[in-house]
Image (cartoon, rainbow, N blue to C red; front, side, top):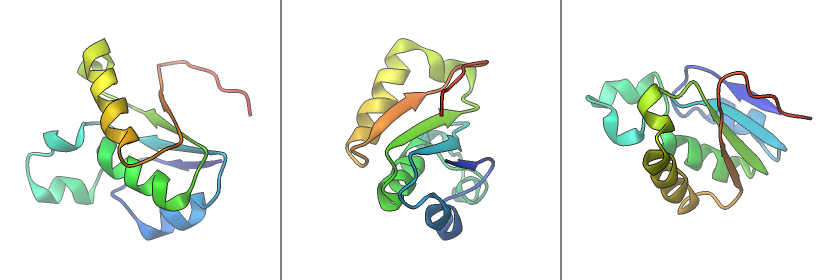
Length: 102
């Protein structure tokens, strides 16, 4: 299992996550909400997380620390669909206090 907090797409995260069963990655905003390009140097949006997960060839990616509006059913459906175009593994949108068995 690999965990990434506040990070832009980094080769080191991809390397550490290589072939992991789970990549848990912070995703505080959908990619299109980055107001300026420099925002993406400090945090990954959902598409960047999907690219990292695909390149690392992980089995499951879990998005964490989502903002409140990202939990709306239509937004979750869109995020999953857009990520699935890049990454073909299991996509989980984490909830507060959710527990995962390892």
